[in-house]
Image (cartoon, rainbow, N blue to C red; front, side, top):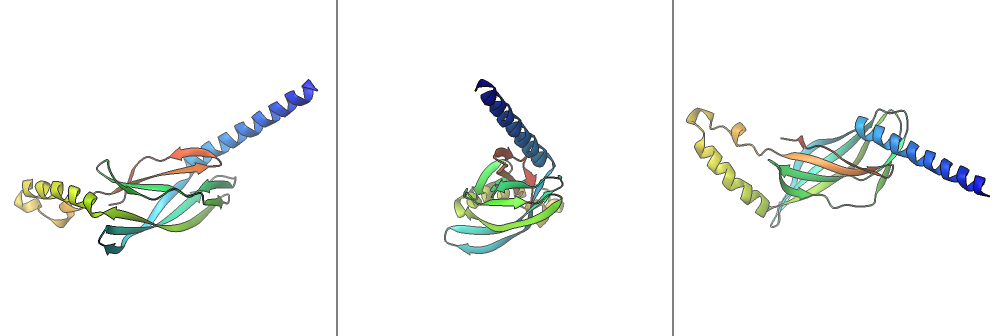
Amino acid sequence: MSKVLLFTAAGGALLWISRMLSAKQMSENSVIRILRPRVSKTNWYGLTIALDVAVDNPTNKSVTITSPVITLSSSGQHLASTPPNRNTFRIEALSQSMLNSVEIQLPWTSLVRYAGGMLTKFQELPDGQRTLENLAVPLEYKYTTYVNGVLYESNPERIV
């Protein structure tokens, strides 16, 4: 009886290690990209930014990921994020998959707080450098997702 338990425990440990290594490989090699960031609507509460989410799986194993929670920030300051949900997606091996489109509500209070800093920065620039390009809002995103049950959080990447 103890040998059966030992083999069962060893098999379970091997399965768990295999899943961890597969998820680690997927998280290191996969790419979750944000495509076509755009303002989809404005209302009294703020701007709604729509983003298309694509996942590349260059590994030779299919994986299951949860819908990523995407967080927008500007110069390291949190602006808004998507609500977490339990949707899961199966990403086949050596493939590129489009996930659903997500919308992030940016409240006016977040934008007003940032606009004051932009105006100060704009006034400090010399006359020759006062262009719309220098006034652009630096937006970054990062995502958090579960890959085969293992949590993965990306480094911030610049959108604008």
